[in-house]
Length: 124
Image (cartoon, rainbow, N blue to C red; front, side, top):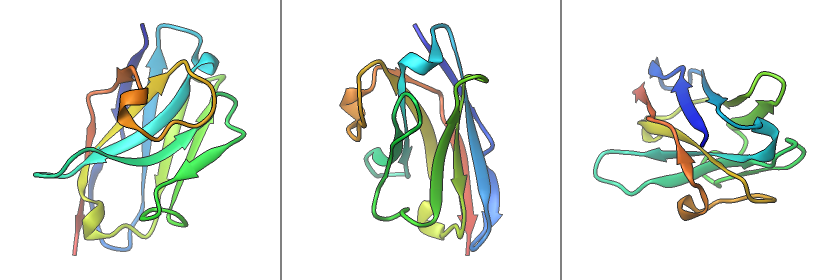
């Protein structure tokens, strides 16, 4: 079992920045690939970013590429999502997810463990 707790969400104006954090506990964190997803009201959950176990490789959805950065600190059991130049369309609940597979995972069904989510609201 892996427990995930997100934090760092909030209200920000368009063009602003936020840094989301996800704290993991329960198992050896470096054995898990990680991902960030988001879900806006009335929409399906969508992939945002993913990172491999070591952090050597990352992958982003086209809509956030160049604006968001995923990173991890295996010594602290943390994964982060730095979000810059935020847009109103980025408004959603953001979830971190973990899976013990290898490589990059971009589908929600590939992830076993999920956090409770943190709300991000971007005003225009």
